[in-house]
Image (cartoon, rainbow, N blue to C red; front, side, top):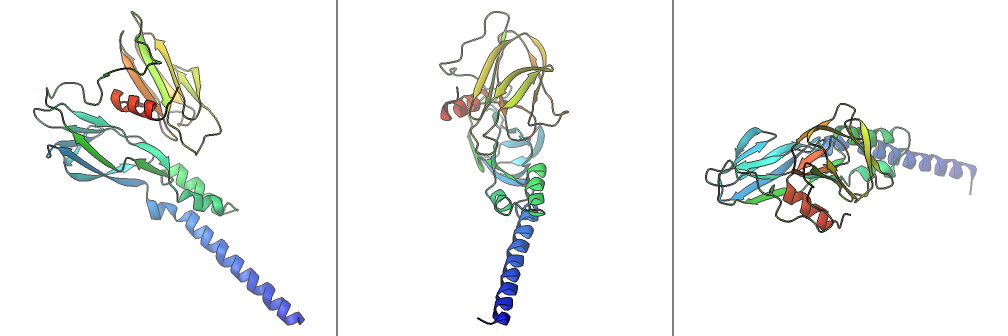
Length: 258
């Protein structure tokens, strides 16, 4: 093989490497443009024409598509005259596109990963479709599936003068290696591991909860009365979320969280 052939092969290899690196860089930095920081969720109900509210703001009537911020959990509430309200909170799951940034985790391409996670484009909201089977009843009643039908076997009802708080974290591959610190009024009460559940009996009054996965100012404030039962979900990013009770129980039992 001549010296010129060797040089040509080396130059060709460098060109291929440059193309691969450029593709990785573009895919890493372009994830936000591909996925966006918001996601469309299809919302329907039986019967239809229910008012759809996102965090208390009316968006229209079922069936319709709503755009939700991927970065933080949001309550989807359906209301229809003559029927009990329905509430559900989509969960965050890691977007498979993020692994494109991980594969090309070299200087410059790592920026795409950080940007995706910082602005929410690195997550998918699940479920992508919400269908509510509305139940006849008083419109002013608690939203379904909020009322607690039956507690998981490992939970007990709060003793007199106390409230029950159940904190849980759904199983997720991203961030599975470490626990998330949960504090109540500035005092650490738990280190929540991946797929774990923690509960305790709290005093009535105002409680300010914070997760180590949230920004300092992202505080979840819950006012408790004696006998209250509240379920609170921790997620990859954003503040802790007070969950509709039945949805929380289903997630806990589905994931066999203890």
